[in-house]
Amino acid sequence: MFSGIIQDVGKIVSLSKFDNFIRVSIKSNIKGYKIGSSICCSGICLTVTSMPDKNIFTVDVSPETLKKTNANSWAKNIIINIENSLKLGDEISGHFVFGHIDEIGHLKLIKEVSNCWLIKIQIPKNLKKFIAKKGSISLNGVSLTINKVAGDIIELMLIPHTFKNTTFASSKQNDLINIEVDMLARYSLSR
Figure 1 (tube, rainbow, N blue to C red):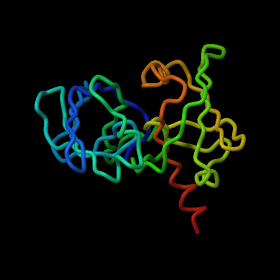
Figure 2 (figure 1 turned 90 degrees about the vertical axis):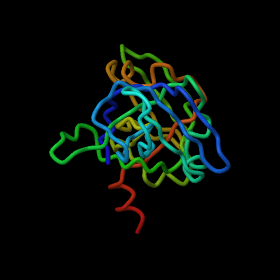
Figure 3 (figure 1 turned 30 degrees about the vertical axis):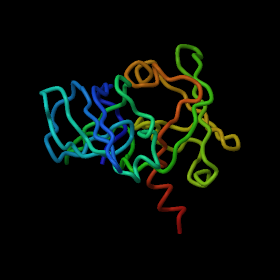
Figure 4 (figure 1 turned 120 degrees about the horizontal axis):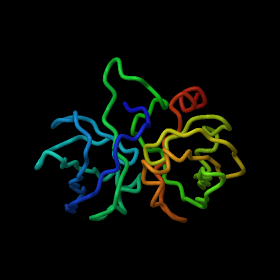
């Protein structure tokens, strides 16, 4: 489990494709993980499988994860948001993020407005019932608050700190965005 407060922006240093999964090595400055640790990579809960260097960890991405996330478009040298899993007693500054991606959305707009950044994401229609104004959502692992819902478009505002310390600083229109709806909304509305 994670909080959606990004601790580092890591860089993919190698990616190997196998028959039904990929193995990804990521360079990151965060500490505290070990082999077997859960680590959030752009919103996806993955397991550290090796640590070839003190600043590099490796994860395997399964076929189901490749099908449901933007990991299918990962390549060498791209950057991804990184967060260690929560430990008992850690502050939860965002919201509970599980790393279980629901769907992929599309970035429709990212625009500076009064020193902040307005973003608009097109969401799949099947997620609309879990989306509410002022509700929480995880986008590429970042815990954010929804400002507006208009059809299949959600609007959010990034403060300068969030913009500068996540992959949103290099995002562009039509980027694929990993979406995880708020777990409270999922369980209260899925009955």
